[in-house]
Length: 173
Figure 1 (cartoon, helix red, strand yellow):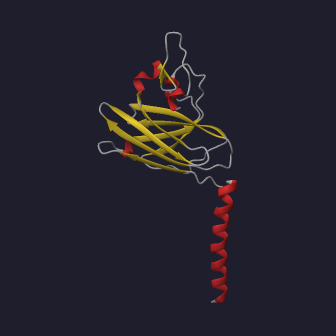
Figure 2 (cartoon, rainbow, N blue to C red; figure 1 turned 180 degrees about the horizontal axis):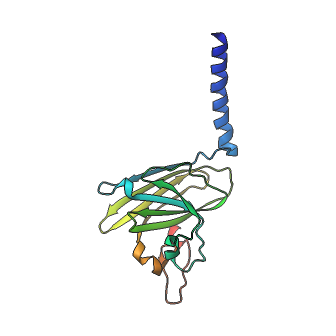
Figure 3 (cartoon, rainbow, N blue to C red; figure 1 turned 120 degrees about the vertical axis):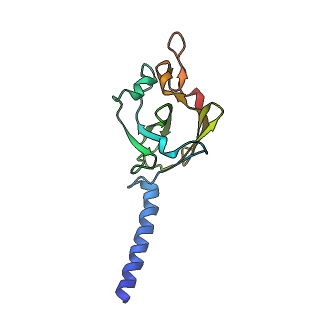
């Protein structure tokens, strides 16, 4: 009986130490993703992709071409671990295959882990994405989603002008 108690205590201490060390050195990415929707919207219609989306693209239509190297992290429910990396962490939020919003979260340390809270709300004739990212590189914003059918005229969620020039990331300042 005493051996079992010692083994149980050692296991509990080991698990606690693992999570404390993991918080600083990220052996397993424990970043979390919490997605919610307002009444009238369906959580099953939300898809979030995580990848790298070059700002050197012609327009946002390329995000839906199938040639982008990304992976689904949420499809009505979380799909596996989020896995964030040093540098550019791009997210593409899609609602019902009709609306989308793309944003970049830049991490300055590969060991940093974050809690991502994404909320979609129906407001008048548009769907608004509100994000709260807690962690060392925290971030908060609320922005309307764009129609997928308009993606050919947008770049980084912003309309391109006649010379096809935009100023990236101004919408998140």
